[in-house]
Length: 205
Image 1 (tube, rainbow, N blue to C red):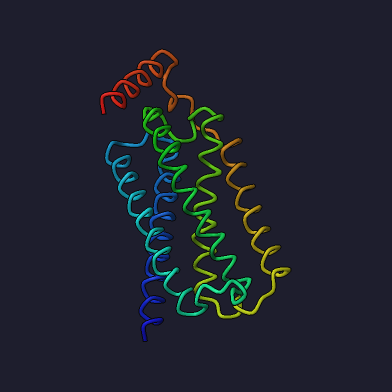
Image 2: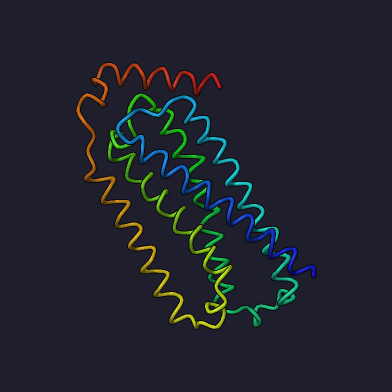
C-alpha cells in the first residue's frame, strides 16, 4: 500500500516535469522567428521552478521506494535502478545549468528570437534542452515499463546512450543550421544597448 502511494506520486512528478519541459520546447519552437515576450520569459522562469520542484519530488519519492524495496543494500540494486539514479542525477545537474546559465542568457538576449542568439550561447542551450527532454522521457520509460526491470546493463546502457546521442544530434543540428529572417535580428547597436540594459537590470535585481 505504502509503496503504491510513493509510485503514484513518483510518476506524477515525472508527468509534471515532462509535460512542462515539452510545453516549453513547443512554445519556443512556435515562436522561433520572434523575440520572446515578457510573459513568455516569466512563464519560462515559473516553469523552471516547477520542474525543479518535480526533480526534488522525484528524489524524495525515489529514495523512499529504494528503501522499501532494497533497504539501501547496494547488492539489491538492479541495472534499471542504477540507470534511474543516473538519469535523475543528470536531471538535477541540468536544472542547475538552466538556472545558472540558460535563463540569464535568455534574459540577456531577450530582444531577439532564440535562434538568433549567438551560436556560442545557443549551442549550450540546445544541449541543455535536449538533455532535459531526454532525461524526462527516459525517466518515464524506466518508471512505467516493466520489461526494463529485467534488462541487463549491456542492453540498457547502449539503448539509452544511442537515444541520448540522437537527441543531441538533432538539437545541435537545429542550433547550428537553423536560420531566422534578417529582419528578426536587431541591429548591432540596438542589440548592444539591449544587452547593457538587461545587464543593468540584472545587477539591480
